[in-house]
Length: 301
Image (cartoon, rainbow, N blue to C red):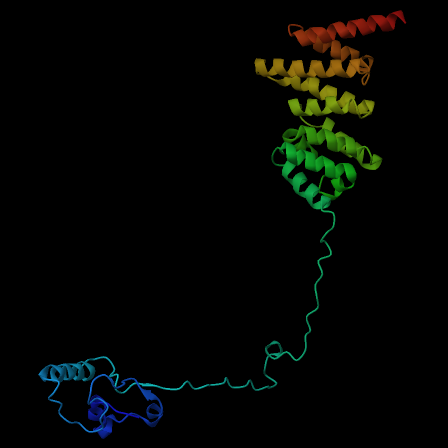
């Protein structure tokens, strides 16, 4: 190995001698073969190159030896040493999962994959229908799932106490659900009792009116609901709201009578008194004429 002039100056001091490990590697300073005299082992003045080269060599030596950074002279390209990690020692205190001897993990199969998710859809949309109106796409998705399997209604969380919430937020869904509940004769009466016990509103009358064309309500249920409607109209103190309520009830009663879902003779006195009380309203007058015509026909028969 050849040493440059600067390396020879550095190695003259025994205290600055690089350690044995560093001496194994190659020096970071290499001689320049293009400049004569840099590969000589002995220092000989070279006057042929002039004073410029000597000044440059001195400045280079000062920059290498006098700066605060580590001297490149003491640095070497050392070979990399492989340091293998120490092996783990097995002991009784060692955690089992850190040193598994065999695979104990069993494959967990998802049995719900590729299966019908209609139950999940019904449960999700039914829960939403209690709080807010459903979109048309959601209504279609819900009705399609229930049409194929009506039992999903009961599995989705529908109870008689929650039916009024659907009536107010989603009357179309309430009509559909009540119609499907007729497939369960042991449960339908509880839901019908809840419907007729509701406070009168536009949605409740709409639901009962639509259901009357498809569901055969027991006579006592209809009479109870009609009685509650008549009492609700009489209890309103706001005149505009009262007139609106009377119109809804009269139209509802006319539909029931014309569709032969309700026999007015069962409550003829109450209905006649109601029509006379609100005779100034056109729908009440029309209901009164319908009652009179039916009474006349019955008397002729």
